[in-house]
Length: 89
Image (cartoon, rainbow, N blue to C red; front, side, top):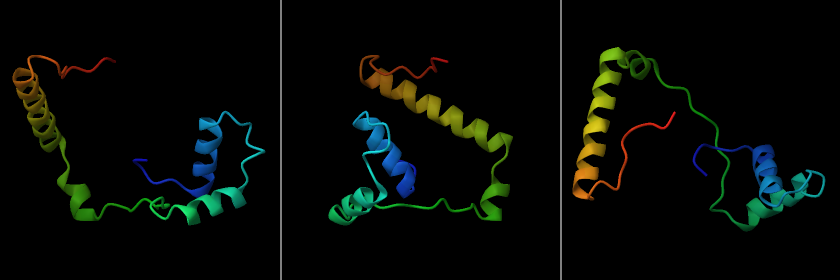
């Protein structure tokens, strides 16, 4: 699922998938579902430690995105242009 979800978030996601109004999927149902499929877990976000936060500055970010752009361009070149590196915002 990407980012960690709480049980309430999982319930909302399931209601969205099945187009429910929220009253038919209970927390009991979610708990049973989680226990039935142990590969699905809930997670809490972890705070970044101070050295990692301090290591991020404008130059580091510019270098990262420049390297990412070059990687996209190389992938596009190797794939015959099937990958678009530009943002569509």
